[in-house]
Amino acid sequence: MYKKVVLAYDGSLEGAIALREGAILAKEARADVFLLSVVPHLGGLQVAEGLHGGAVALELDRFREVLERGARRLRQIGMNPVAKLAVGDPARVIGEFAKEVGADLVVVGHRKRNMLERWWSGSSGAYISDHIECSLLIARNVVSDAAFEELFVAQAEPAAAPSPEPTQA
Image: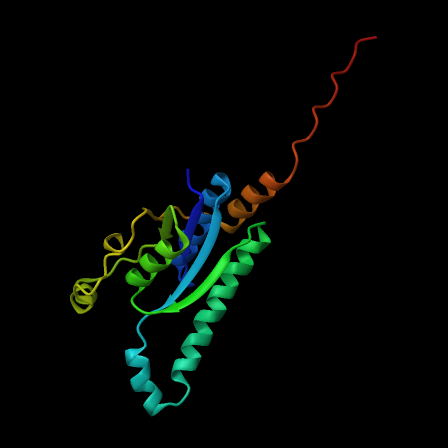
């Protein structure tokens, strides 16, 4: 059903949940995996850049490391993700990237926000569903390290041959 899956990953707990749940689904569907990390608007950082040179570069480096960590994790379990780092409004960027790669599914995490955060974010494209043309999975199933490893190790190992039945003498 799914041939191309975009995993939105920001290094947060919610992003890790999306990475794991999305990887499991993509592996079962034998889908191509695209890992996307979005650095939110750099407007505030550009102000900080004026006060402290290198602020923008530090933030980009931090997100680059997050992206590489996620890609490395996917490679460790036998996947071959296409990884991309982008800058902008996350909802819009995820939508544009999903369209660019022809995604069938986008997997994101969910972070609850308080009323003040919702008020500040306003209606500037905060709803990802308004920006994508494919299915959207909001991952919420927590998968432990052990369960995640076990699932992929079990899939990678060939099934053991049945042992012969003991014969009666």
